[in-house]
Image (cartoon, rainbow, N blue to C red; front, top):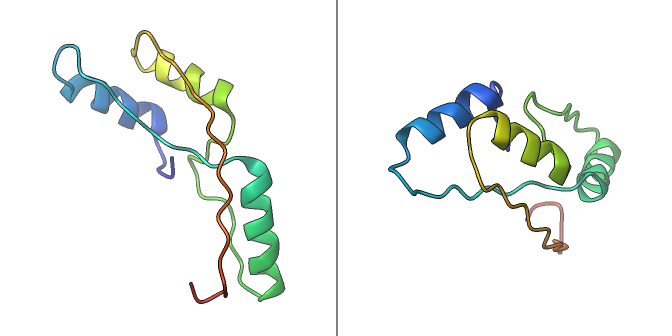
Length: 88
């Protein structure tokens, strides 16, 4: 999730969901983002983490619960993204 004010935004998501509605989100793990950041640094591209960066399942579960979601379930499904070139 890449937006500042996560808790406020998630509370708004919760507010506008109809009764019984579901929310699905996706996050990147630290190990993969650190590789991307390292590659960008080699190319001289500065990329500080934006506010609102969540990389851990427990942190995601906590903020969703705090925002008022119930029956929160976080499933981890690791994927590796490989690019043929930096232009991709």
